[in-house]
Amino acid sequence: MIGTGMTTTGSGSAGPFSPHAVGSLLRPAEWLLFGLVVALGLGSVALALTQGRQVAWSEFALGILAALGMIVLGVYARRYKASPRLGLCAIGVGLFMSFCAFAAIFIFSLFPLPHPLVDSGLMAVDAQLGYDWGGFVRGLAEYPALGIALGRIYDTALVQVALLIVILGLMGRETDLHRMLLVGMAALGLAVGCWWLWPSIGPAAYIQIAAETAARIHLVVDSEYGAKLVQLVERGPDRIGPDTIIGVVAFPSYHMVMALLVAWYSYRTMFFGLFALASLAMIPATLSHGGHHLVDVLAAVVLFLFCEIVARRMISGKADGAI
Image 1 (cartoon, rainbow, N blue to C red):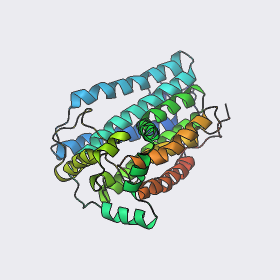
Image 2: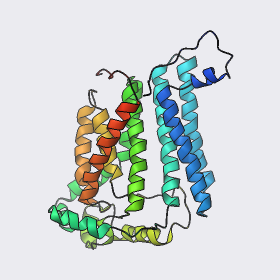
Image 3: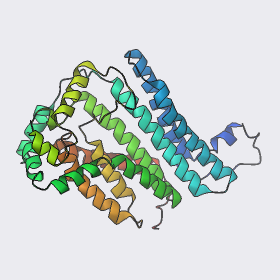
């Protein structure tokens, strides 16, 4: 079990570059998270090279360097400016940004996928549960303002997570922030593993929605988007760059995982109500815009709860107080 408290420097410290001094730059939980980021980074580079992928490394480098700069800024604020909350915030944002960048490279380096798509089976399960994506979208098109609003909420998932990292950091919710980051990283890793073994690309690639209907609600994942996903699955990307990254992991839904993250870890803060409402809205938003089956959303709940239990066991610390 890993604690979250700061380790004090003993009188036997050998200087600023001793193992003890270097180790004290980050909290134990932050070293765990940083280790996951480094492991993912090395894995992404190795996978891209072995797969012969053309990666726009220089374009990714700017974001990765900015993320590392945030971590350095956080260490500086914590150690030399007596601003532990600002340091916690900056380090959390840096870890999150760098993990997302490496995850994008890793996921797209997995293409083309070696296993057959399982969408037909997932749609069969949806049908047994009484859910039909085409019917849902056509019904939603009767309320275009609602459909457009759900599309915008769908696009804010990453922004909501980043915003909550800042809020928890500035409020000093250290244990919650570290657990949240660990759950987010672990859940994405497991989601990618499940999706690689049992790949799916969502109903939009299989169910034709009239262009007028799609336009009424600004459908995020339409038939054209679905065709791009099929091409990725069969041939892989011609080039991997920040401008070519699109959402591809369908089962389980990581959008739903992120919605649960912000609802769960904003609890006992003044922002819980807003995040909870946004998370509830993310359910129809995720279902409506063509990239996920109903079973993807249900699987995400199980995945999140599993990762949260693991994170709670791995990162110790007293429950942070309400603010």
